[in-house]
Amino acid sequence: MITFSGTVKRYPNGFEALRGVTLTIEKGEMVAITGHSGAGKSTLLKLAAGIELASQGSVLVSNQNLSQIREAGLAVLRQNLGMVFQDHKLLFDRSVFENVSLPLSIAAFPRAEVGKRVRAALDKVGLLNREKAQPITLSGGEQQRLCIARAIVNRPAILIADEPTGNLDQAYAATIMDLFKSFNQVGVTVLLSTHDEIGLARLNCRRIHLDQGKLVV
Image (cartoon, rainbow, N blue to C red; front, side, top):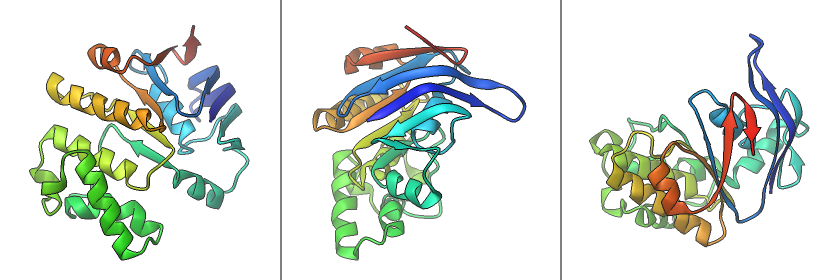
């Protein structure tokens, strides 16, 4: 489902964040990317999501080379992909419901369908009773669950998460990891980066380690 072939990501200043990465993530698989800060984990996830493009080599998602499809094609591809960012990227001037509904509104879903999907996503992450709240009133763990609800509301086949438990205490982190495990159990392909060894033990999934932009076997 996701294939990196000799993938290099080089920035304008000459820094190579990824150096010749070759990796395949199968449909329905869960894979955790580990490595030191600056190892290239976030870059790899951005390439998988089409947020950035490879400098050399290729990144294929669902058999589509992300460097060879137009922006409109990328937009369609992203509708089948959910992304959870490190910095949440929540809209603090909108309610919990409105934050989750945003991807559906952009995709022009009918209003009735939006309501059903948003409430189903909020129920899945345990925030159904907070749909009218403002994100600023939520705890850190609740904000992360809100991000996950927004990522899954369009029922994506692929879920990508960048350090989803990075700023959470152990109890909240366990809840988040259990959510990702539950998504994978129903067939969602999950790719995440983490430093959370306790959380990784809960997932019991394949690990990929990066060191200075290189894949370490």
